View 1 (cartoon, rainbow, N blue to C red):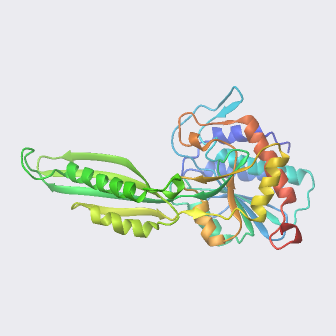
View 2 (view 1 turned 60 degrees about the horizontal axis):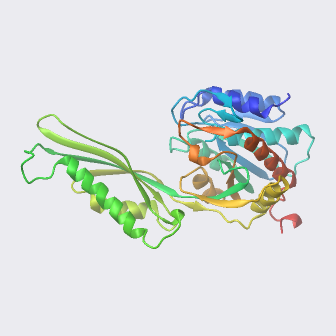
View 3 (view 1 turned 180 degrees about the horizontal axis):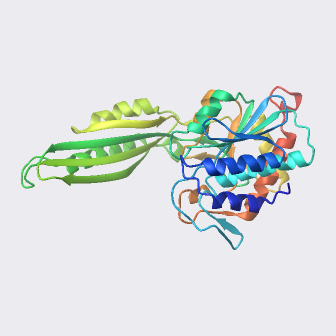
Length: 357
């Protein structure tokens, strides 16, 4: 099968795969990878998986689900538009293309290359990645997320979400009792103030607590006054979600708080054979490599602590376009990322080998 990278990604973008609804795309990708020469299947949780080679496992872990929102798929001025172009169908398409080149060239890989198009990354369950961490035991892992073709991502912040509900008997607005809405706003103000105090003297965004008010609403039926809100906080490596949850619980102002999606931050080592292979690959492709620490989260937060192997995130695209109505990928950058990945996989030294030291 002749593979046109732009045609592949365009087809992927044309198949909607909002998180928890990835089945159609997973089966299409499985069939495509099979035609390209990979052993391929859709696993028990819905991940699209492709494999080639033998030996220790090297895992390329991307995700094929997206957030909601339809963006007309089109090419304009060298840019390919569509939901998931950046986050993260573009990076996973680059994985497939690099693997296909290796197979078609007859490369004899000293490892078993495992491509995983994971499900439910965007829904925060990370169902696909959690299943993969139980099934595979890689010596190295590349997470498919946008970094830009000449950048390598080494870390992602943690996350905590809290849903709050305030409910009380109605009182007159001229009275002294704070309304449910005021109690909810007081809670948000306390969280924001705590984060601002914590952030004093911390220059890097990666080291700060980043709070956000995700939603807020209030209502009354004439007898009961009710307010609801959801607050999210992005966490630095030195703050565990459990610790922050215990602190935030003291700001409840009489509300009922429910904490969810507690995910610690993760930062990988940059002095690894994998990182050095990417530095060489980017330079060989004409770029100047650099390292990134992201303020969001990814499946690296799930896989890194379990696998404890050299790990990083790489993929074409500008992460500032994630989840936006203008999501697109620059085609030239996408093609360059495929070149870099092919170089890395051809030359990647397994940890413990002479070439890795």
